[in-house]
Length: 281
Image 1 (tube, rainbow, N blue to C red):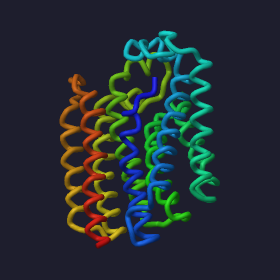
Image 2 (image 1 turned 30 degrees about the vertical axis):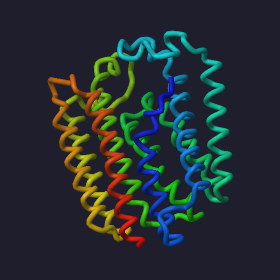
Image 3 (image 1 turned 135 degrees about the horizontal axis):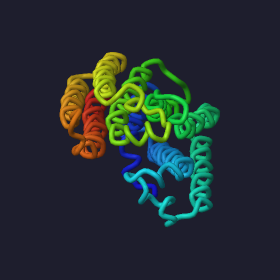
């Protein structure tokens, strides 16, 4: 039900926040194995909590949707009790990891859980649910900055915006597959509300905004040529992602969603890593 790759989207950006926060706080992009391990543990635990809870909340809807009816809960490969146990256990591990980092991380851990778990209900109330999902991933780099420094810094906020817009943009594309189903079942996705063509335009605007926010981030942290190269790479990958999805052809949505976005997050992390190493020498 929960796959390792579910953590791939946000984790690299969290590690970017970790490096930037550590560089600001101590002059070194590496905070040590203990802090690094706790950040990874917290990220995976938070993502597992959110995914398991989402599967529980959506199990009846998933059972009706041909695209999702083979998931573990609708197929009764797992019980709701087992999924609930995973949700609570993952949430406990997340809070424990936050408490092991610093006081501010612990204090804000319920807020992080509220955002990530709250997304699961949003599609029933608002077509802006994609932006709530964006926020739930967008707070990852700020959380990692807090984890290494014990404080919030405005320099990380453009990255929060970038990740939030990037996520909302690709989630809108992914939701195009369920446009008709969402209309029939009174689910308020953006495609079901304004139609496929307009939703795709919003997705493109989100990705343009994400690139702009990455440029802002590069300026805010004093990034060098390697970081700017990473921003350029993200811009090209997002343009490619948008080109894969057509109004009348959704056959490559999964490629755009899973494959391209994996390259976006991991690729940007690698360029940011080279950049901070170069700047910290």
